[in-house]
Length: 99
Image (cartoon, rainbow, N blue to C red):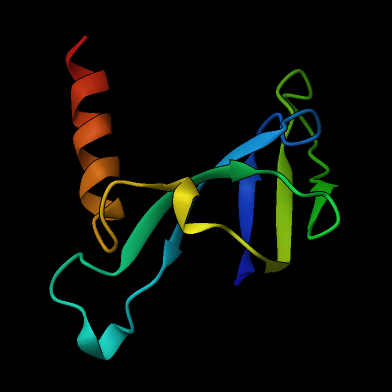
C-alpha cells in the first residue's frame, strides 16, 4: 500500500498510468540507493487526488500535485527487481542525456 505525495508533476489531470518510485525497503535495512522500487501502474483516481498548483506565470505549462492515500499496487506492476528503482531512474536519465 502506498501513501505519499508528489509535487510539480504535469499532465496528471489526463494521465491513466503513473511511473511511481516508492520505498519498499526499510531505511535501516537498505544499502546505498537500494530503498526504492519503481512501478508503472494505473493512476487510480479513487486513491490519488490531483490538485492544480496556482502559478503567477507560465500558465501554458500545467503544474499539479498528487496526494496518494492507500494505493494498492500489484507486484506485477513493478519494473525490475525490488529495491533497484533508483538505479533504473539514474540509468534512464543518463541514457536520455546522451541523445
